[in-house]
Amino acid sequence: MGLRDQLSVERASCMRIGVTNTPSLDWEQGSAVHDAETGREDRPPRRVLDPTASPLREGSGTKKEAVECCEEQAPGPGTKQSFLARKKRGREERERGKAKMFIQKFLAIPAVQPLPESSRLFLKWNLAQEGEHGKKFREKDMQIRLDGKNCLVTGANSGIGFATAEGLASHGATVYMLCRSKERGEAALNQIRSKTGNENVHLEICDLSSINEVKSFATKFTSMDEPLHVLVDNSGLLEHKRETTAEGSSFFFSFCNKLELNFAVNVAATYTLTELVMPLLEKAAPDARVITVASGGMYTEPLNKDLQFSEGNFDGTLQYARNKRIQVALTEWWAEKYNKGVGFYSMHPGWAYTPGVAKILPGFSEKLSGNLRSNDEGADTVVWLALQPKEKLSPGAFYFDRAEAPKHLKFAGTMSSHSQINSIVDSIRSICGLPALG
View 1 (cartoon, rainbow, N blue to C red):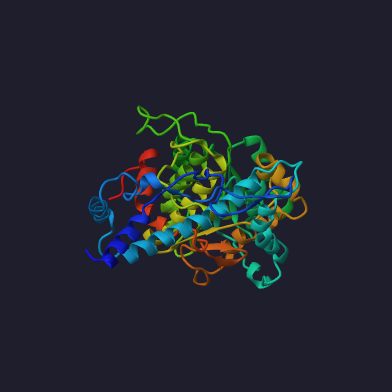
View 2 (view 1 turned 90 degrees about the vertical axis):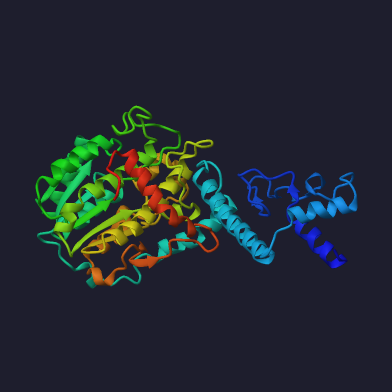
């Protein structure tokens, strides 16, 4: 082996050298976090070489043995491509880590502290868009009527769900409000009827955390055999501490009779309800559509097969982001599977001041009081998607402010994860006790 070959082998081996003083997951390697109290910047420890990980360490044997060891560990053909692939993965991890850190620090901020600089950077564009809301909207887009069309809205007694139900009713639709609380649902129902003058607004009761209740409701609802023109999967939940439902599917009852609560509401119920009312949606084709209210929080998370966060320390915010990523991927999957007559769209409502946000993220709500959207503004794109001719919309697309938006951040490493959606769908169906797909 010549000197040049030896150097190449040694250089390849150095690429495998270990790392000590590795930063924890709360830090992004090489990034700076501003400490609002001290005014200083804290950086994670630098990468340092671990001599014990190198085959050329002192006392490892003769030079010949060291070279042979390097030959064994050196990458084969395509070393350059392997290096570029690792470099790309590292860049993607750094970008996703930065965005994740911004979101997590922002959502966890106590109301008594000033907003950290990292949070300001993350929200700078988003809040700028909040101020632009509606400036480029066309009035005629919202002049379309929905008389004679049936719409089902989940989580319709408050927040964006209530504003969506009211918006659809104001356009003449027959609206079915799916709520968990009968008392709160009736109050919302009366308010919408009074405000819109539309008496074709109805209340349905279902606890979406219970898959058995979802199935019972779907059976009753589909028995009406009426076409369903619009399904709005709006219900969402963010529980910071791990909680489980009272029951799981009968299929899994002997093994695991409870579901993680965020997953149950955000994913399991959304998927099960949509699948079970599909006959009514197909009956309304070609005008039928499903609109899923997702969140920009999904930008930092790829698809993850650990659907119920069984691995590692539970993080409700992270689980919520994972759930929303699944919703966006499911929208793509549905658009490909049911490509005749039923349209599927997901959307981000923007940062809206809803009762749910005020309850689970009080610091978030108080700190940005006056800058958050109203419920009507958050629901605007949902209603817009329900009104537009389908030829104006892109199947499986993700929307924000009446326009198609990207589903992935540059270098965030989330795009390739969508290839896992078929196996994730299989898992969801098993968990929910639905028959396997053929």
